[in-house]
Image (cartoon, rainbow, N blue to C red; front, side):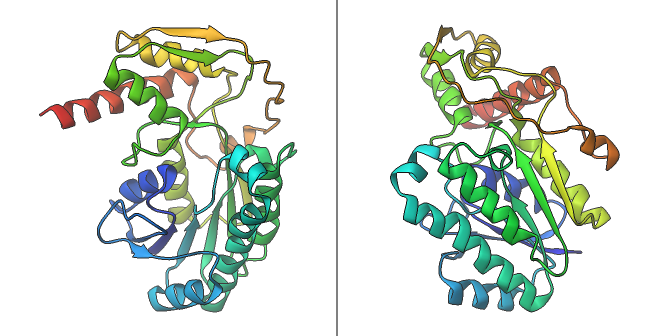
Length: 278
């Protein structure tokens, strides 16, 4: 059974990957400040010595590097820290992986392809670092990520929607920015296939073919729970991504339409609400 190390396993994305992948692989997760699961290992990815010691001790076959700050606003306000975490942290992980000949699966973003923000630039630099992995690498490029995660508290798009549902509060969401969303469970499925089939040297976009706005998603999800969503044009001129989704077909990887991921997100949201009420 392959040994997998997930950095940032307490984060919104990392927690879902940890919960999904440990059903099939021998998975260890790390956290920086607050362990979402009691068995997680404390790790500061910006500390080269800590990363070297942890990776050498655990000797994973794959390192899924999630630990980063995904907030474009935070990155703009903290450029030095953003580069230290998103770039230097990635270098530390790759250096440690190279020491034990582990493969790296790097969680990037569609923002890395044509970066218009510091966040996108740091993820682009992270991609350049990831390809230095000697045993093999895969770069994953999701868009705005939605879907249930065991981390329901981080300020992420889905968690804001979940709060609207739980508090039964109407919400106002932007109509201007158009993007192709990513279901968080799709990321887990892609990583599982990458590990099972030992896919290397690929950059894989993980998103649906259809352009949507935050309002579209809010309306479609909240309506299923009897909550109203109101539109507001915030004049967000961020361009849509230009990823070629044919890569998923070429690699025979799971593909989804928007209605398919919406159905899955509604289902997992209902399951979560039922679990906390029972």
